[in-house]
Length: 276
Image 1 (cartoon, rainbow, N blue to C red):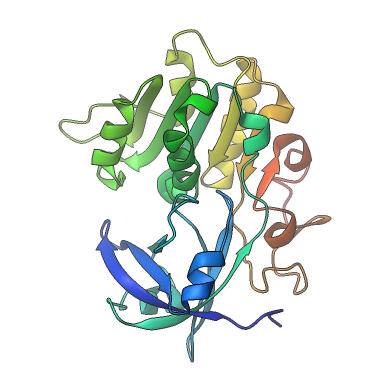
Image 2 (image 1 turned 30 degrees about the vertical axis):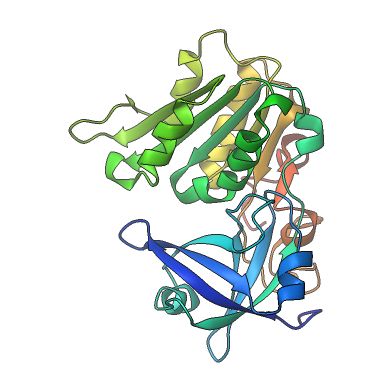
């Protein structure tokens, strides 16, 4: 059972991002909640539609955005397809924020790698925006994004804008590349071989399908990144958000409470075990 009732939020903007992907910008109807609500990049909220259900969705906003919160969603199930029908003025429930975010204290002053796959870019967007707004607090930022097909890339203009920022580089990869694709054709792990100066000593944040994240983490170790500097954001069947219901249990961990961001040394013995 949920620990706290959902707060009421209203849709202020519905942004179509792709064929079945959209972003909802939400605002608390209670001005006090709007002022006092805080989150860390990498955390998630539970979005609740009465009579339909509740789903965990990562927060894509910067922490200093007070007026509204961005949540990017793929319409793949009953609740997310209902969320896709919402328009400005519609109201829903929100619980959160939940979980552990990216290790920003450990990232201070360091070179950073943000590596994402598919819609995995959505949970990482908040940390990229966080770094961009505090650019002097961090070293070189490298963003690697992989997609199955070049047509699947979201926010192409946003990646182009990030690539123009100081001490920032963006490399794209597509398993299948259409005409005019500006990036690499192949796996996102192959981009690691194309980084001038390599990536040893950097702190890496990875988000995407688990097989992709496992392959990237292993490749990073081969490129000299310390295991304790590799962090992954997991996506599991999270229901309660507080580690009570057990739906998201991974061995001794509850992903909703102990994650979704966890260090590679903790996850390495667990990922890939059938049944976990």
